[in-house]
Image (cartoon, rainbow, N blue to C red; front, side, top):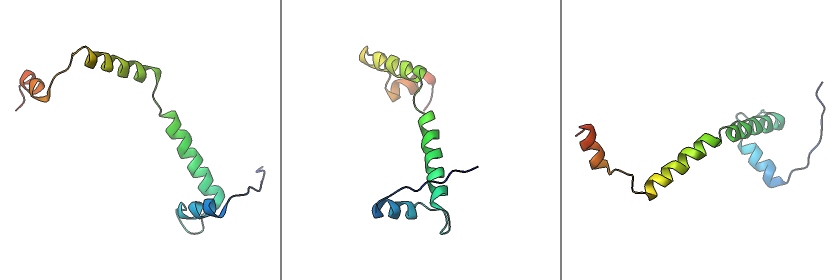
Length: 80
């Protein structure tokens, strides 16, 4: 059973919600539901601890000079 609630939004927010509708008769509930689902999915795709460790290792490699130029890499891989 759905519980209904009334929320107050400014005219500016209502205008932005109107612009975000996929079709003219899409309800504000559907717009907000879609936007919040997208935001939650995006948040779930944030950097993991492993990603952060990999980035930190890469930064350490750069600082230590363990880098290749594009030309050096092409030579090593035999790519023209």
